[in-house]
Image (cartoon, rainbow, N blue to C red; front, side, top):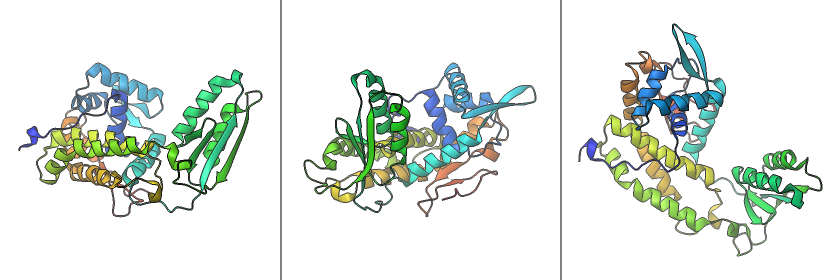
Length: 319
């Protein structure tokens, strides 16, 4: 098998050029000082089959979102990541690379959010459900939502922000312990763990060939860039949707550890190759590309994933 024969799983459905560009910049650019020409962005996204018009549209949308800004150097404006975007990317990379590394200490504590919204406030009810889901909560009953842990501040803020103007709305946030955590009426029953386990197993199967090829040096630079990005795009979704329940609430066998090892094998082994490919395609449009393009790797200290490579790397992330 040569590098061109390796089957690279496609990025999951719904990945837009904007999402893809955010992923690539978060992985490979770790400084707001780097001046990034639009022609370099177009060349990079072409590696993923993205057209020039779509690449320019993605750039424009990221500018509107405040993740990218422009400044003028010479005749044409250049793009750069904002300091806020750098901070966000570092935090997200820490989250993605650390997720599943070890079980969090379990105290048996849950945060419970309960609310009552009159019929006139249905739009606010739907918005609140979306907000709670984004915060890692799941509905135990219709208006009783839970998440493991003890940090109640985000839930309190969401409830206050979305319901304070709704006449007759009531809400409470409290800490709770369940007498039967694993029972049919306990908190574990609120999660679709069977579907999550199936998704992990599918990930392992989809990336098995690529994992073996990466470990055996059978992936070339061009394939490494697309493959590594695809693996991150797939893995990051688990880090956002898995409630990270304590082991005694999980079914056996639980495939997350094997999925994590699959992801890290690909991500770590292909990092330098993917970086080299990015430098290769960007340099004709951006002579300084080799000075700025880097890549993240999981470090020996799981709280400190590090950007590495490039001449202007910022060094290890603060823990």
